[in-house]
Amino acid sequence: MIKENKVSKYLLYAIGEIALVMIGILLALQVNNWNEAQKSRALELNILKDLHRTLNTNFDLVNRGISGNESAIRSCELILVYLNENRPYNDSLNYHFENSHLWWKTTLTNSAYQRAKEHGLNFIKDDGLRNNLNSLYNLLLGFGEKLNEREELYYYHTASPILTQIFESTEIPLDNTQIKGNFAPLDYKKLKSNEAYKTLLRTSIGNKKKMNTWIKNILRVMKEVDEGLMQVIDTYQDI
Image (cartoon, rainbow, N blue to C red; front, side, top):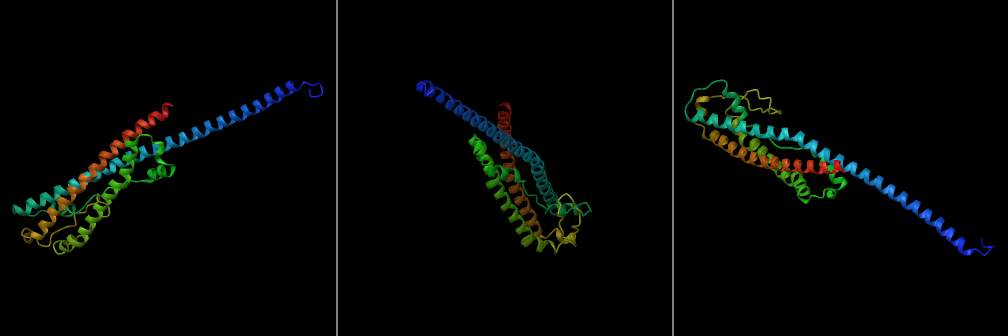
């Protein structure tokens, strides 16, 4: 074309070739970006579903914790009635003597949350949901763990030295559902006038009520987070 002095036609041809190459590159980049976006959305959807599944698994644990603390409170109140009203001893009280000093803590599995943090939580556009999620796994559970530590310290440093002088055995089970009723009083008649033991029972009631107030707060936020997650999951699945 150059020899034939057809420079303009050559330039148009060259520009056309370059344009085709550029269009091909842009299309390839667009397809690659689309594929990467799809992979990212699939990963994020998987993370959201994992968070949802984990929360639903933990709902049962939290509710059992609330029920367990309420059961311990009832046992404390029953024993105080027996002692204050001078009621006679029976073997069924041994269960309540043991149950009254058990406590239930709230520990949620956080592997799904840690995975979400590693990916980066900014893909959750709902600020309220993101803040609740962070608050649940950091602030609320952190303070719940502090309450549990305080209860442990109270039991082993304050309550246990008194209980060992009152009962034949003060061994508490590792699993709170495996109560054996081993707390048989050494002298039930003296126990009725033991004000230190009655103080332990009243303190135990107060501690467990405080713990349950906090656990119920955790449960409320868990439900809010779960509802928010379901909405975001539905949005991802609709696209």
